[in-house]
Amino acid sequence: MKQATLMSQTGIFNQTVPVFTGMLDRMGAWLTIAQPCCAAKGISVDALLQERLAPDMFTLLGQYQMATAFAKNGVSRLAGLTPPDFPDVEKTEADVRARIARARGIVESVTEGMLAGAERREITIQTGPDQKMALTGEAYLLSFCLPQFYFHASMAYAILRHNGVPLGKRDFLTLQR
Image 1 (cartoon, rainbow, N blue to C red):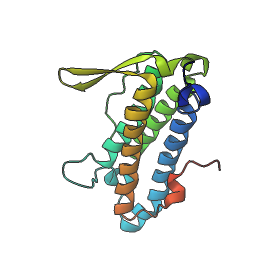
Image 2 (image 1 turned 60 degrees about the horizontal axis):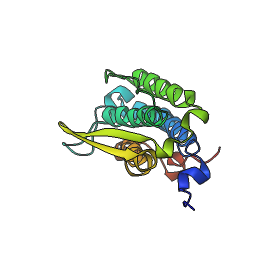
Image 3 (image 1 turned 120 degrees about the vertical axis):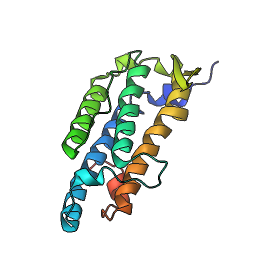
Image 4 (image 1 turned 90 degrees about the vertical axis):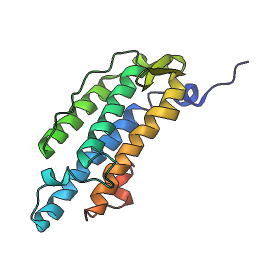
């Protein structure tokens, strides 16, 4: 008898849609928490979007763009859909909030039925200019998509903290509120 995978036991839907929407909501809340901190410093959240942890890392804006891309691309690929294109054109806090809302809408549009069997679906990702890698849906989600999503969310959190925004671990966790 074939051993059941984690995904087939818990359902890939439960490992994607609520996970992505929960963190996207938190990331939006971080911008709200940043507003009074920025006002006290005499800067706008828009200016904060250009901050980064190191010269060779993405800006806060770039971290938001990457996290939202992994959320919407991840569920789209797992559902067997072509991910919608989101050009990285955001410049302001309002733009970032709109991007979060668009990504969240895409994630929420994926139903449990659309993800049936997704853990076994072959997903091919670009790993370099002329390189591709084929993974099962489960490997794609657990070894690529979720780590990338959480990395960029964590870097956004770290940039905000580094710039004095009073975030704590409770602001990161997506526990039911």
